[in-house]
Amino acid sequence: MNATQPLAGFKILVVMPSIPLYGLELANIEIMRLLQDKGADILFAVNRDHGQRVIKALDRAGLVYAKVGFAAPWSLPRSWQAWRTLRKNLQEISHDMQVVVRKFGPDCIFMTGLSYLLYSIPWLMRIRCRVIFNVPNPPDLAARPRRKRWLQNLLWRRAAAPFTRVFVANSDFTRNAIAAVGIRAGKIQRIYLSVPQRN
Image (cartoon, rainbow, N blue to C red; front, side):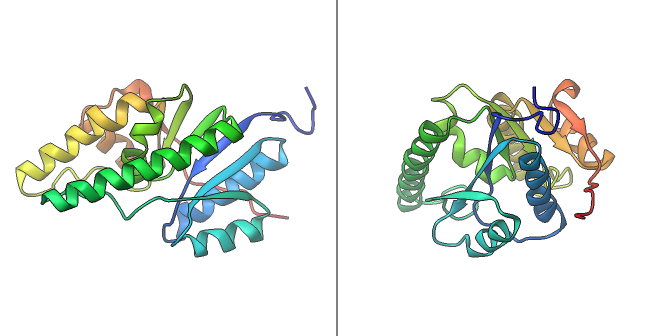
């Protein structure tokens, strides 16, 4: 093992298509830059149509990306037309991401949002790779009406959890909210958001 690059050869695929670049998102980029400095191979999957802000930030950080066809944030279809659109989006995402995975061969997939994880289920079902979900927003335990809260909890417990090795919470509040929807404690790690300043 190279003492200066202990992660040499370890490949991380970061699914961060197109999101506002606030504290957590910028921290994700900086963390991946630091891991790259330790020898890890990092590849970001970004939205080919709406990922310009993410791409600019990655260029500044010296990180590599692949453009994929991720769609708008996840929402439940309310019509047959919406279901057809969702199915088409899922097929496009699955195709693009399978191509990326086949070429890159990641050891780990780093998810940055629940919507992206839900959109990724079709292609995650086809591969064997650990998934780390860095949770940006905790489940809304006070969601109304009750039906909305029940559905939200179901998505976390039955859709997100089976494909996630570790849920990363950046606070006790987030950790407790994830546990409250039925995620077992052993799958949740609290890591406070603290990134070393660049020299």
